[in-house]
Amino acid sequence: MIRKYKNSDLNFVSKIWLDTNVKSHNFIAEEYWISNYDAVKEMLPKAELYVYEDDKSNEIEGFIGLTDNYIEGIFVDAKAQSKGIGKQLLDYVKTFKSSLRLSVYQKNERAIRFYLREQFLIHSENIDENTNEPEFIMKWTL
Image 1: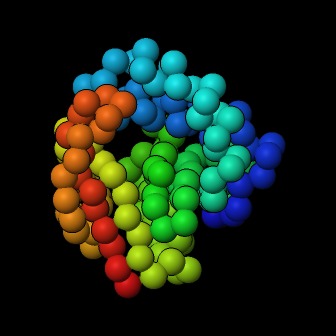
Image 2: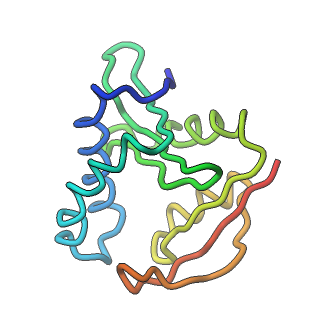
């Protein structure tokens, strides 16, 4: 089930954010993610968030964060990955957004393949000023 974020979800989504970033971005020092954890935890409730909650266990297994039409990230708990949760979250927001954009690290090949499969196109390249890592700016339009 996908639903809007509630304040009581904060600890669950924050942990998924940290764990997923550390695992998916092994080319960035783990300390970077840990050092940003508190700031992100403070900012998460200010974003437009939707969580994927397992119907049986009622556990949050993933979430998507948006600022207007910009996808801040899609995060799925490691034990729930490759089950279509990220696609369901993306499909959900596509029902009420006519265009979406995002940044993805070029070294995160799995994420790039996912977004290309979901009809995003690489629009431009950039260097993330926080990590000095090259990234693609990708866009999707209905």
